[in-house]
Image 1: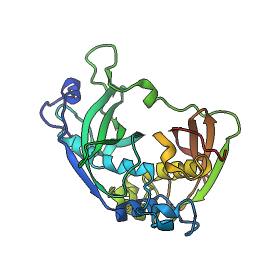
Image 2 (image 1 turned 30 degrees about the vertical axis):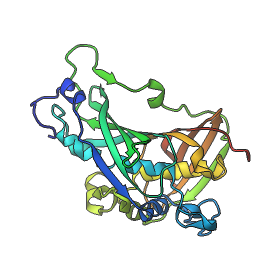
Image 3 (image 1 turned 180 degrees about the vertical axis):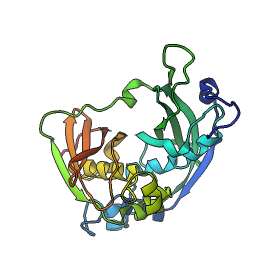
Image 4 (image 1 turned 90 degrees about the vertical axis):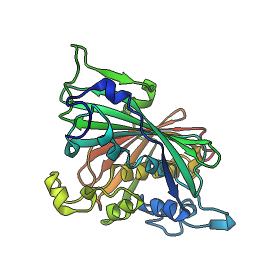
Length: 310
């Protein structure tokens, strides 16, 4: 069992934990590799809306960075969970349930990022516990806040720690940020279909998520999958790219916030269908795997304005 200090689950110890500050440094090469990892230019190497993520196009000084690149700043914090006193769980039963991202300013093409993380929520769900970790990322040189990530981690088998009949629940975030998007019954405003590559997970893992579940057939088999699966954050990147293409007219900096709830695994090589509905400045979306006709991801993206091309 992970965790240290107390021999039993102690929620007050968990929520008072202070993570050490950490640095994340990246280059233009990292930003371009990430863009390729979530399918940019995969079907058209001269796509006029996506070449800017991997190449200095039309004399621009730097490549542009996709907003979901911000999710990479949160990598590594699940391994930090083993240092949280009072948190008792089996790491093999950990699931990444949700990711919420707020973008405060366009991400630079390279930089040194200072991450400040804290416990944002803890909930006893009986058979499982949900732990929320919030990471605010700053440009180290200027001190300006760039973005915020909030991860909801499902710890199967770690629930039942409440000391009263009322299940323990702590949250420091507004409820609207973690709300699930209700998928409309109406026809989608836009639908985008894209096939992932058979080696997609092997390419995406080079952005820093080296969990062998996504590369090692033996590990995937032990986890109950017929072969390695795609990273959930890779699927989220595909969905947001579809929204940028279909709703934002290729303008990635229109995106203010992103919420994604991971529902089911994706196998590399499967076809992703992203369905989008407009609700004011909010895009509600759902991603399905065409081959199995199953929903794998749902959520919403908030925009700062609507594209004039709509």
